Amino acid sequence: MKPQFKAGNNIAMKIPPHEYQQTLSFYRDVIGLKPVPVTEEDATPRFEFGDKILWLDKVSGLSQAEIWLEILTDDMDSAADFLSSRDCARCDDVEPLPDGFKGFWVANPGNIIHLICESDKVN
Image 1 (cartoon, rainbow, N blue to C red):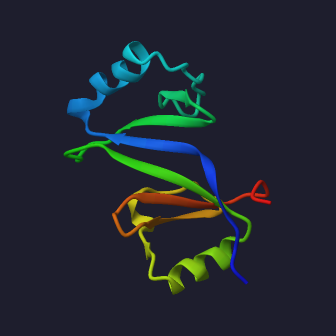
Image 2 (image 1 turned 135 degrees about the vertical axis):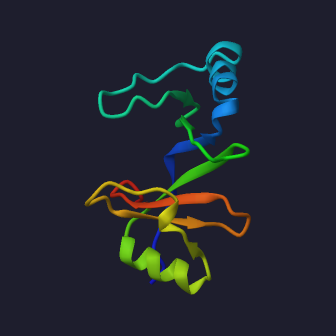
């Protein structure tokens, strides 16, 4: 049985340090997106982006910005098997996930990273 998939709420923009302040200023000052309050655990700047949240992550070692997307599924194990059977490349080493988090990383054919995570909000 094919698992269900649905777009998640988060878009992460991974930005090299040499472009970070200008990119942050673009969304905050030029475009004027509404900031989402940061938490004690995670001070990553984020903004309302329509019905999504845009996270701006500064990442050392990048030469250019990347977009990472979140995809929700109703069944993590089934999703992993299904995506594997469709030759989707797992890339769990791109960024560690918290212990106990039900999710994994894949890349689409164009090398856009997707966080696949389990949610009861798929149905």
